[in-house]
Length: 141
Image 1 (spheres, rainbow, N blue to C red):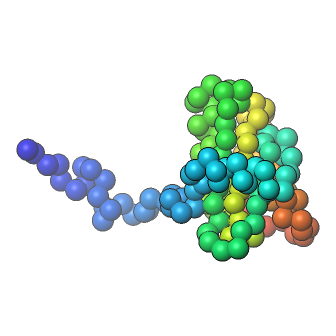
Image 2 (cartoon, rainbow, N blue to C red):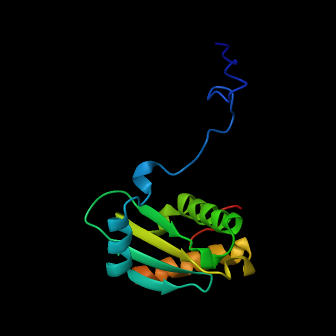
């Protein structure tokens, strides 16, 4: 069996920018977690999506994204999920510690620019967390 050199397979030592992604502990996985967050979490409407935020006693901040077929074709649904995961990853500090967030994508998600989605995400988090204050620093796109 022939093995390609590490550089051909994307070895970690060759990449100047390491891969950044949510860990498995930062993702809502089970249906029970989604259901509990949807049922018990505080709701915030953001136009392009609905956000539910539930505080827990301990643990990491976790995200779950729901994109039904009504939200559009699979390419759009998957892109919307990537956008929201990236917003969550870059801006976790705006969320209360040990919180679960479920975002339900709407069909009009792509009627908004990335900057508008980002602003709506921050506003929805503040609304659901029950606090007002200054806008967190915007992460670069």
